[in-house]
Length: 406
Image (cartoon, rainbow, N blue to C red; front, side, top):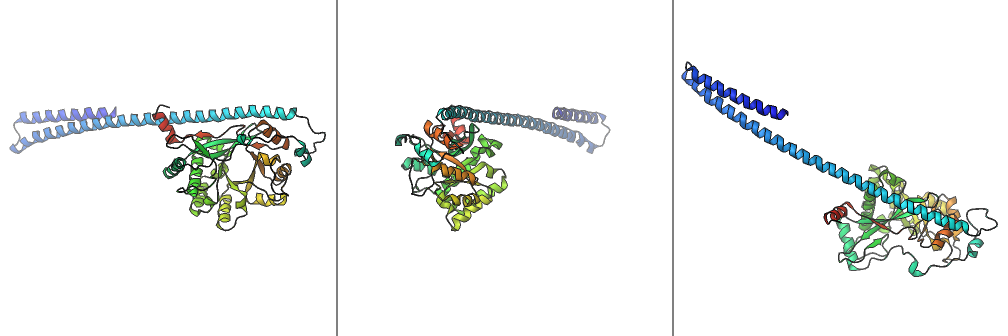
C-alpha cells in the first residue's frame, strides 16, 4: 500500500511540475535564460514517473518472490510434519506389535511346568541341560550379515559411500520388561544397480576389493546419526542405534577424531549411539586401544560381541566402557559347545548382571528361543522372531520416490 502511495505521489509531483512549467511559459516576463526551466522541469517529471514505475515493478516482483518462498517453506514444513508423523506411527505400530508378541511369549513361558525350587531368576546349569530344546535347522537361523561378494553389491556400496548416500535399515532390540523396542541394530541397505535382491549388511564378513572398510563404517555412522535424528529426534537417547565397527575404523585416527568432535558439538549424540565391537578388540593394544578409549571418553557406550572371558574379567570389561554383551541365543541356551571351561549361558548372564552389563540375545528366530531366554531372565533380544531389518529411506531416496510417483 505504501509503495502504491509513493508511486501516485511521484505522478502528482510530475503533474505539478508540468503545471509549473506551463505557468512559467504563460508569464512571459521572465528572462530569456529562464526558458530552460520548463524543459528541465519536464525532464525531472519524466524521470520521476519512470523511477516510480520501476519501483512499483520491483516491488511487485519482490512480493511475488516472497509469496513463492513462503509457499515453499510451508510445503517443506508440511512435508517434515507428515514425515515425522509417519515415522512416529511406524515406530508406534512396531512397538504395539512387539508388545503383543511378548505377551504371547510370556504366556507360553508361564504355561511351562516350573521347577520345584527357583532361588534366583537364573537357573542352575543342571536345570538348563535338562530342558529339551530343539536346535533350529541351519536354514532357519538368521545370519548376522550375508556376505556382499558380488560385483554388483561391491559397486553399489562403493558408489553409496563415495556419494555420501548410504542408506540404513533398522532392526529393533526389544525389551521383554518394557514390551517395546529399546534400541535398533543398524544395517547398511544396498540395492544393486542391475535390480538384484536388496541386501542388509550389519558387519562386513571380509574386506571387499576396491572398498575402504574404514570409510564404509564411517559412512554408516553418519547415515545412522542422520536417520536417528530424522526418525526419533530427542527420543534417540532412549532408543540408541547400535553400529558395528571394526579395527578398520579404529585404525583411522581421522575418522575417530571426526566422530569425537561430532560428540563434542552435539552433546546428546553419545547417548544416541552404541558401538558394537568384537571382544578381541578389547584386548588389543596400540592405536586400536587408544582410539577405542577415545570413543568411550567422548561418552559413547560399547557393546561387546563374542565375549568368552572368565567371570572375573567382566568387571574389567565394564570399566572399559562396555554396557552390553551381545551373545547368540544358541550360546546362551547352551546349544553350542566351545572351549571346555567356558561359562554356561545361565552363569554368563548372571555374571554380566552382577558386573552391571546388560545381555542382548541375538539371532532369536523361534518361539522356543524367546521362551528359553525369558526363563533365563534375559530381558533384551533381537532377531527375526520379532522383526527383521527395515529400510529407512534417506532424504534423497524419498525425493526420488516422490518424483517417480511411488
